[in-house]
Image (cartoon, rainbow, N blue to C red; front, side, top):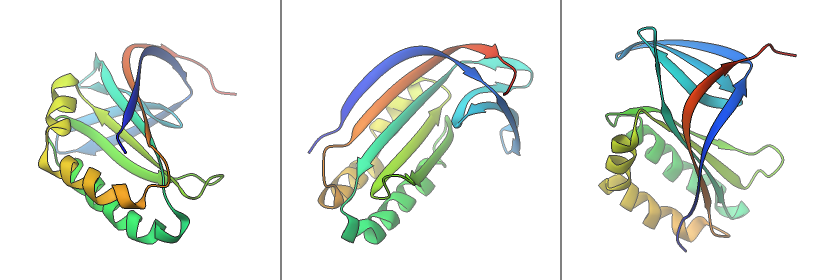
Length: 148
C-alpha cells in the first residue's frame, strides 16, 4: 500500500485564536478544527498543512497507536515543523488522523526524506485496513471572521 496525495491551495475562514510560547518565540495560531495559520513576531507567514486519514484494523489499534505516537514525537523535533498531531476519529474510531504543519516546503521535503518516515511507513503498513489518504494545503491568505 502506498500513500496517495491530494494537493490544494486554499483560503480558510477561521473563528478561534490559540496562543503558544515555545522555544521558537511567540506564535499565534488561528484555528478552525485544526491549526491553519500562524503569526511569528507580528508577521504573517504562509504555512503548509498535511492532513492524513489512516484506516487501522480495529484489533491492531493499540499497537498502531504506539507507532503513531513515536512518529509524532520524533517529527515534532524536526526543524521547520510547527506541529504534528495524531487523533482518532470519534465517529470512525479505527481511523487515525495525522495533522502536520510546516513552515515551508523545505521542511516538508526534509520530513519526507527522513529515516523515521521511512520507518513509520514500513511499521504502520501491516496495521492499515485500507489505503491512507493525504491532503496537502498551502495556506496563502489569512481571513478574519466572527464566530457564531
